[in-house]
Every structure is written in structure tokens, then in C-alpha cells.
Length: 129
Image 1 (cartoon, rainbow, N blue to C red):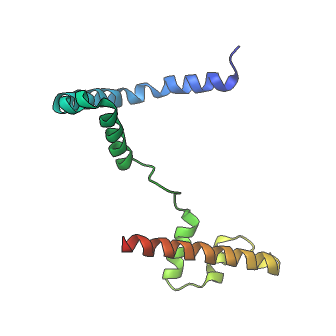
Image 2: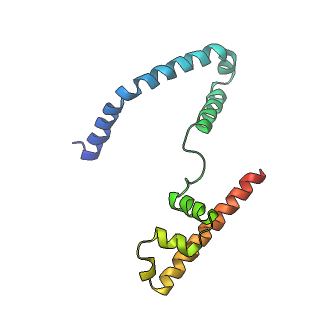
Image 3: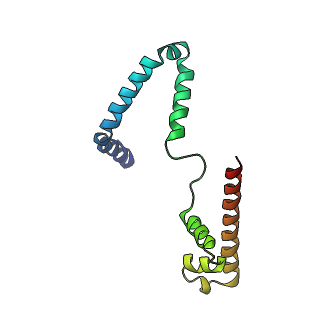
């Protein structure tokens, strides 16, 4: 007997198939073109060719390498670049920030400062390379 999750995943795959018919056709055309234009490379080392092709495709499609940005940190960075203080950012992002105890506010501020520092460091290192 199939589990409920197995049924759901099968039916969701069947639901997705009509949407991807065009993608399948494009892929078929693409691979036929590759077979024509790179027949010698495919014949000489098919595994290396396929590995390299997949690497190229993965590089051009999302998701990219690394962890995606947190939109809250993006917003905080923008607010700070506009001249707002860390406390102002925290008040706008955390409901009832002022009602937090001193240690809670301290932890929130410390966390935001650390996240901003990491983001700035990452931007600086990306700019250098």
C-alpha cells in the first residue's frame, strides 16, 4: 500500500508535466544540436563532455552557490545606508522591541551588527576578486 506522501508526489509530478512539455521539447532540440556540433567530443569522452555540460548549465541557472540573502538583512542594510541607526532598524523590524528585556535587546542588536558585518565583509571580498 502506498503512503499518502507517495501519492501526493506522484500526482504533483503528473500535474507538472503539461507545464514542462515545452521545456522537454527545447531540451530535446538542444541535445540534438549538441550531438551534431560536438559529435567528436562526445565520442571521444562522453562522461567528461556530460560533466562539463552540466557544470555549465548549473552555473547559469538559479539557485547560485552559497546561502541566499535574508531579505530582512537586505532591508536593514538599506536603512543603515540611508543613515538610520541600528536601534531604529531594530524598532522597525522587531515588533515590541522596546518591550524586550535588556538582554533580549542586547542580543538582537548584537545579532544584527554581526549580520551586517558579515554582509559588508562578503561585499568587500567580492569586490576585490
